Length: 382
Figure 1 (cartoon, rainbow, N blue to C red):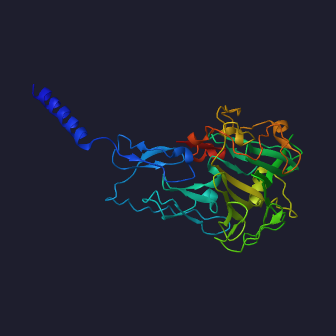
Figure 2: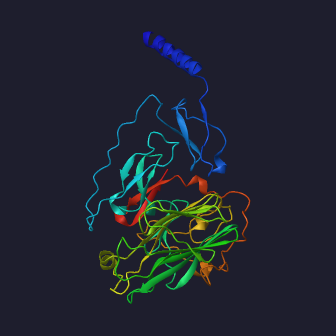
């Protein structure tokens, strides 16, 4: 009898708490780059009074009340690199995450010069381990979070993204391994079309690599983009909303066109160690400087196509064979372009105008990804 009465009391108290607290608070995405996520959302039941909106996934997430202070974050000491250089520091730059904003953290050991802080989890993340990445012998992470390789052919152009107002081609350089039936390939340059503009991003050929020598080449509408030396240096066009920002003293930039796309591009070499491990056969006359890339898209339509672009499409189903060490995507004929700025690939969708309707990509942009499976791939999760 006692236990039964106690149970009734607990139920009544729970109902009283709910009545006192009332309905959950409403919150909105504060970032104008996510127009599809401007409606009010209710805070989760687990934190009805204290939450914010993760604009990338358009989902409310719990946050600490303003009276509480987050525990101090002490990043782990980075492992020593073969060059002996310290890992780069990164900070959360989104003021909508006050518990993480401005906190300095060290880049992980496998991307000591290329990382950013994910403000939602308040942890450093490698550019090449996030959806939208195109790095190495090109390893892609699609908008759906699935990792795959697209080798293409050396000295050929391939369509990476094609939508109504954005078209991105990549020029592949490479070497042929006599014991294999394909080329080793890397992205050497990009040709980007949007509105009525042309943007070129390229890595200059070099033999001896130095991190202090800038090997990045940029041009906008056929004119060279001259960036001042030093991290933080910027360039802006008077004819477009495009902004180019140096993220390191040399060889690394962030390029953004408001409401359309953002690209992080870094020129990197093939090191002797990488050549030895993967049997690339790199010689002293050419270290095959290439681009490691990270893409973020703001206005893709559901009809978007291209090697990477298709993975953001509304009805896309991955063709990649899962469960293998090196999942490879085919389709060279479908994505081949005649030159760096050509829109003649079979997958082309470009007409210089924004399309109607969103793709399904916003569901995946906020995924967290990290290296797994012994370095053979990347695992993504919400």
